[in-house]
Length: 352
Image (cartoon, rainbow, N blue to C red):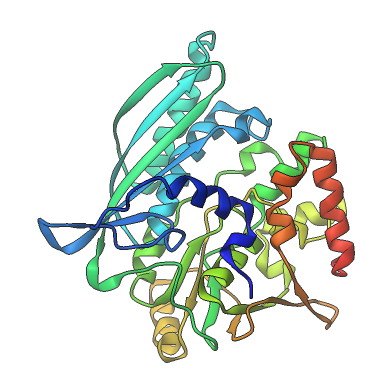
């Protein structure tokens, strides 16, 4: 069996969570949702959804150099967690930790990135906190409401369900590869990384989806986590031109990068990966056609808890994503070893 505890990030989360008494008003268990869901005694129609995320490692590791990107992502990453539970956002508060020597132009660009992300999603920053520190850390805490009768979590898919995603993937991993492999910046400019939280799609999906999770950790890692939570596997039709964002597919052709790599890295985007049951699929397809919502069908849920790739060559392969998900912990910050291990993984499973 594939267990949650096989993934070191899950073990780390559990090692902290064991010290904290769980609220009797909390609806979800650990790992079951992108945002925490809380019962409110004064509201019998909605759950309160709360989530918090910090953008820091991406800055210290050099993935983000543009302060505008830093601010944009700090807002979108939390809003994406709300999207994955189908929440109607109420707003967010932010914490800004930054070096005292930064000039006003730099900090203004962070603020502009945050505000533009808010205007893109029609959400407002309600307040926050500022601090001077040795490194930059930008935190967003977002909250919203989820109808109690339309609960959307990571748990609930069944064999035979169809698997979809709200858009092409890979923009985060393309930027990550350019940075870590010291490629020219113009191969995939940082301005190409402007992921958007799919709030409207999440609100729509709460009427149809059997489970949902955002792809902030990359497509394959998201599939792997859903597999472990549901103890059900996935069959993926690897039409890379359809699965990858257009500019990512072009990047792969330009740099001779294997397309699968853009789905396997841990620096994702904010698309929603979700399943729809056989009983609801026809109604779901008619509904998305009526509102012109963009989705991509990736495959289906299978009873065997493994990820099966139907490769363009016609060959099928079952892959174990755990070594890749644990790689950031096992290489202890050695990015060259990290890239080497990724290549080794692809060779092991015949992914080219």
